[in-house]
Length: 378
Image 1 (cartoon, helix red, strand yellow):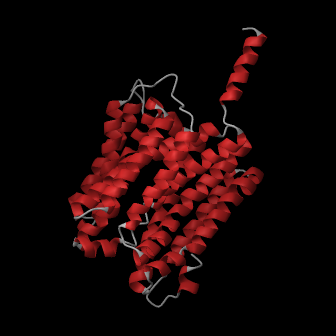
Image 2: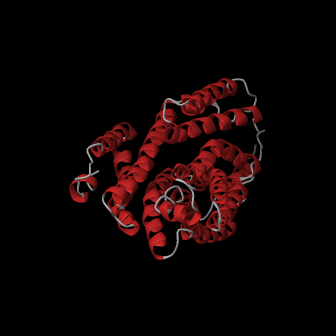
Image 3: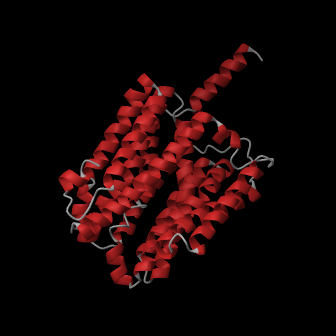
């Protein structure tokens, strides 16, 4: 190949990259959409008592307003990532945003429990399309190492604080408007994200479209469904119930079958080399553990503050503000200062150790604990 042809290809590649200012606007759009998805995992929690009174569903049914979302989101996440590769990241992103908005409107207008849960499940489905497409777009938009680290730091701060912001926003909307506005508020985020995505994102259609691993998709979706459903049943059926451990065992077996199939599939949905790489596998495990702990804390402390300490919805949201601020500061500090200087090996275990200490400290809360000495340091 001649030097002029090589230079021409380099010029085309550079021209295809977004301008620096455009890249940060793309980050704003992606971050807004991600905030909508993460926020919705917690914004409804504070509104549940009001929704329960309005629609008249039982205490045992109340958890499914939250579980329906996580069930659909968790079990279909891998499929959403592959559809972004098959169809194109921009298209899947926009479909996810639009679908999330429509399902939020459906849930907000619910006249009964079944309609509310259906809307929440659809939110989870479209969130599973949106989230992996957003990450992929972020990865392809920021190609320079330093800018990518900064962008992922901002994205991580948005993802980490979205749950806490949801609790604060849910309290404000529930107390001053209606529980339905904890769902309708997504329409505002969605309109902004959809308009920005339509104007700023490039099509990004894959040149070589991989085939969909249908058996792998069915196995992993059913397996993840079994695990999430089994854990959800533990509250109402206890750990000794077949409806708890039965689904957990079935989910684990299906996940094992999925892992076996991925070694034989011509076009694997999740090549095992991605997980078997030590750095990637350890980072995925750390994110999974920290995410599970974080959202568990959100749910536990929400009920503790309102039911045990008598906080109002707004006061409960305000009580989470120090946690939100700490997440935002440490996300930027770790990605821009600590990791570049010391590397991830000491930073990640340090963060996990601090989180574990905070979780252990939470076990000491009781009815006589105060916010300043019992909750705030956690």
